[in-house]
Image (cartoon, rainbow over all chains, first blue to last red; front, side, top):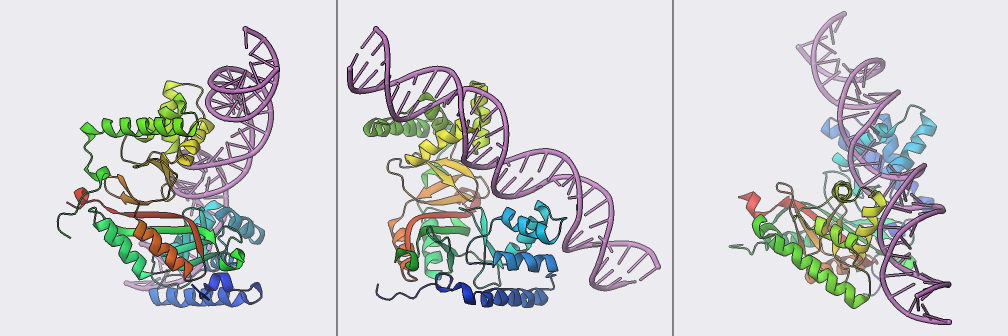
Length: 162
Length: 162
DNA sequence: TTCCTGTTTGTTATACTGTAACGATGGTCA
DNA sequence: TGACCATCGTTACAGTATAACAAACAGGAA
């Protein structure tokens, strides 16, 4: 394939990454208002921290950061916030890394397919209906009805492949 | 789809499951011999325990069992055996469950797609080239070269769907 | 055989990941 | 105001996994 379009997460330069964070927080704020759920300062802060890069964030790294800002932070502090953000589709959990990544198009909770660069650590998200359909069809072919799926691919992003 | 062929793991009745275990152990024995790697009693035993059902085995459950048979067992005992079995393609790790499942067609280490029934807990394995290709193609379309993938689907098997 | 070497296992300790349980706080609404 | 429910603080602990080093052991070389 010639000149493939590079996924945003792999294109994003650090110097304009602030826009990604603002966008994520603004969207979350709007969606929470629509749903009548509370986007508390803690939840907002954890979302910002998760979005501090296009790299997965580990729960205990987030906790270290929170502790700097508020001494009373403990594991439940960060896990509860992450649960909320995952349930509301603002953040995804990466099972193969025990880590969390901001959702590219927040809104309804949804699966997705994650491309994890083993070199730079960045993660891009696909949400491809064709893939979902094919997987559902293949499962159905052996009598299995899929309800939710985890799809994570490790490999090399275009930039790191050089 | 009418009369889908049910995956072996979902079909297998407990009373003829012994055959699955024997088959897995025999295959592993042969493959290890071919490769010149050692299929020690400990590794054999852990493989048997992993295969004790078509349900995922947790590392610390395996450890409990091992402790009954040999008091000196400790976490590294089971994790090292599991590492060996995974590296050699006899066992898969299920990332979304932190658990391990026997490989249906042992041999080369390979990915696969796992169908996890949320009702009975059984897990079936697909190894569908079409799926792999489509995923590789979709990743490549955004400039990403996939090397290994984790695909796990939670849902209902035919039997549990009734 | 005996020694050497590399692999496997034993052992202790510890790091990392996640949750239970209960009380305190604070927002919302009758 | 008071009652209720969600959120957060706090302590404790459960569950998952690895580091590091010593002991045992298999297999080949001398």
